[in-house]
Amino acid sequence: MLTRGDPLAGLLEGPRARGALMIRACFDPPWAVRVEDRAPLTVMLMVRGEGWVVPDEGADVRLRAGDLAIARGPGPYTCADVPGTPPQALILPAGQCAYPDGRPLNGSMDLGVRTWGDRPDGSTVVLIGTYPMQGEISGRLLDALPPLLSLSSDVWQCPLTPLLMEEIIRDEPGQEVVLDRMLDLLVIAALRAWFARPEAAAPAWYQALADPVVGRVLRLVQDDPAHPWTVASLAAKAGVSRAALARRFSDLVGEPPMTYLTGRRLALAAARLRDTQDTIGAIARHVGYGSAFALSSAFKRVYGVSPQEHRTRTS
Image (tube, rainbow, N blue to C red; front, side, top):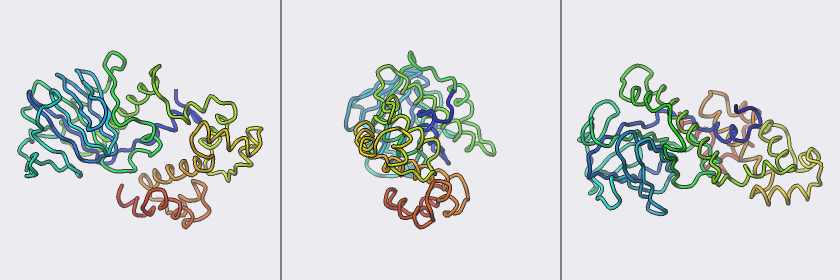
C-alpha cells in the first residue's frame, strides 16, 4: 500500500492525462509507423500479434502479446512488424498524421472510433496511449525513466487490458475522461512493476532513501514541502552539520538539498495549476513560496513559461 512518505507514491503521483490520445492500432504485416510527435510519454500495449519498437538511438525492443513498452520523448522512433520495414505513416505533434513524403493522411487509415490502421480485425493489435503535453507527467518521473523501457508478460500481466479494449471503442459522453484515468492507472501499474524489478536501475534519490541521514531529509521534504526549510533546519532534523548534509545529499541524490526542494515545490505547483482553479498566490502559499511573484520567477526559470502560460497550455 502506498502511503504518505512512500517515495514511490511521490514519484508516481504525477500522471494526470487530459484529453490524451488513445487509439487501437490494427495492422497486417508488413507495417511500420514513424513517430515524431515529441510527446513526453507514450505507452504501447501489445494485445495481439507482435512487433518491434525501433528507436533512433539505443536497442530495439520486441513486443509480443501481453508485453508493454513506454517511450519517453522527445526522441523519435519507429514501430514496425520487423526492424527495417519502411514506414507507411508518420505521426507528428498534435495528433497529426502524414505519409512519409509529408502529404496529409486525411483520415485514410481511420477505422472507426479510436481505431486506426489496415483493418479492425488485423493480425496485430496495439493499444497506444500518449500524453501529448508537458506537465501531464512530472519532470522527476520523466528524469527517472530511460528513453525506452519494456515489460514482458511473464513479469507483468495487465488486468486492465480487457477493460481498455472494451472502453477504447466506446463513443459515449465523458468517455475521454474515463480513458484518461485508465491511461493513468496503466502507467502507474506498469512503472510500479518496472521499478520493482530486482535489476531495476532506480534513480539516485530513490536509492538514497536507504541512507539514515539523506533518507530522513527526503521524507521531510516529500511530506511537508511548504515548510520554510533551510539547509540548517534540515541538518538539525537529521542530526548532522550543514556541511555534512550538503555534501552527503549532493553525493547521493546528485543535486543540493535546496535544488531538490525547489523541484518538488514546482512540480506540485504545476499539478495544481493543471488540476485546480486556485489563484497563483494561493498555489504559491500552498507549495511554500511567499508570493505569486516568487513562485512565478522560480517557475519560469525552471519550466521556461510563466505559471499562467503553463495553466493555459495544460487546460
